[in-house]
Structure formats: structure tokens, C-alpha cells
Image 1 (cartoon, one colour):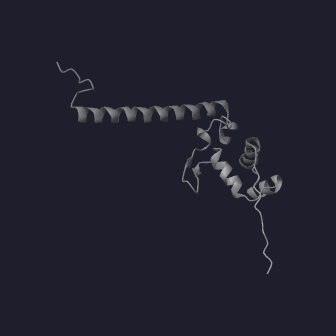
Image 2 (cartoon, rainbow, N blue to C red):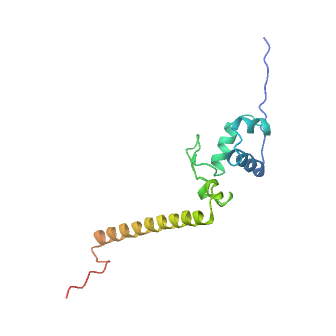
Image 3 (cartoon, rainbow, N blue to C red):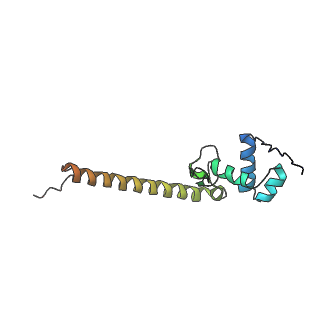
Length: 133
């Protein structure tokens, strides 16, 4: 009986190459299978992991259940999502203002809840009461 000893060869890829592969997939529409063939990768799950870890898509690490942020929260990627790159200047401005408005509403709601909790727990009046004369 012959016993074959097989060694697993681990290949390390540079950050630049990982970003290039991810951009080929997300921006140029290259399929995972074609990415594997083009860059001589061992499997397509490498590309999936890089997409999550580098912030191209949101998701979880399968082993550690660590949450990865999506492209809108990651600094090393392009400034605008792909949809907005082809939009007119007015459409981009409207999208930006909508996001700003949503952020301001969330901030106001957070302050409102903090004041309600503080008033209930500390029994002090934080909000001004209207003058009734």
C-alpha cells in the first residue's frame, strides 16, 4: 500500500491584487469563475472572502462571525457607489441631501430618547415648558 504525502501550498496575495480582483468582479462584471481562471486562484471562495473583508460587500466571517462593513463605510474604495457614478450632478446632490436628512433625523431621534431617559431617571426637567400667561 502506497501512502502519498500531499502538501498544501499556501499562496499569499498582495492587497493591491485583492482589490484589483474585487474591482474586476464588482465594477467590470467579471464572474467569480472567470476571476478564478484569470488570476489562477484556487477557488472562488477566496474572492468572496476578499469582497467581505475589503468592504466591497457587507457580510459575516464564517468562522468568527465578525461583521464586515459594506462599501459605503469603507475608506479604501471608490468614493461613490456604482449607481451614482452614472447619475447627473443634480441626482448625486439629491442623493447626498437625502442621506444627510436621514442622518439628521436619526441624530434628532437619538437626542430625543436620551432626554426622555434622563428626565425619567433623574427626575429633572430638561425641556423648556411653554409659558402660559
